[in-house]
Picture (cartoon, rainbow, N blue to C red):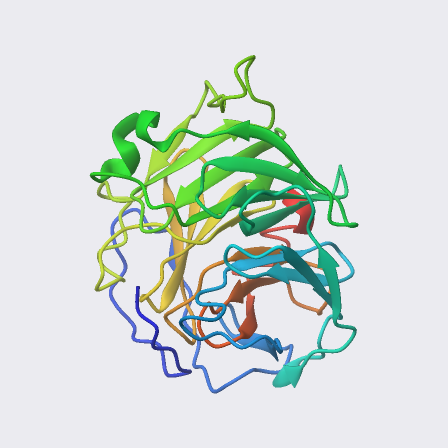
Length: 305
């Protein structure tokens, strides 16, 4: 995964077949809130230092309607901060550290569930799903054996780095091993053996099958990394690609939105903080968390929808 990041003009490519619309925007740092889809509306820099041998990559980010939360890769601390003003880069205010208790080996990524007022989290090795309350208590929900996943992510094996999204429309979880071609869909309750239960109606979808692939936009090809949902669509971030993507929950590519940088990781939706709806995208290598404008108002509602 590339560690290089920087704000730059997005490259415009011809749309792929099956894409409803491609929204273009000229980027020049964080924009005023009267921006365009894909613009950086806000930029905040967290105080933790991210260098190899220290915190390394860091992907976890979530929004609960009032604050941003984040954690380190394999970390055992849930950080809470105030929402920043538009523009930036801004330094954090209201920084609070909440010890996570009960997640052996730490966590990796998180997703806020507005109905339960808790965070879904995946373990640092991608094999356990936890539910964490705002006091930091983590309760194990079920396990995921990646070797038994259908198609093993359409790769030889699945990456232990996993991003998750909570879907309140049917109380389910979307599970995306890093650089996977296949995004998985699970119930929020395991079976009697404490194993994950796929959603029978749509247990997964693929992002590399034409005409619903990303090849026209991404030099790295078609694969999923960060994911978020809060409505009828799933939004997918592809590290090393200067677009993010809107998919239906059955795998139809609905849109490709230019963005100002090519490397990210965790995603979370926010339709409350600014006059425009944004998706927070956490840059894993340099401490920045960017609010990127959604393709339309309320396309991705916070807390899973």
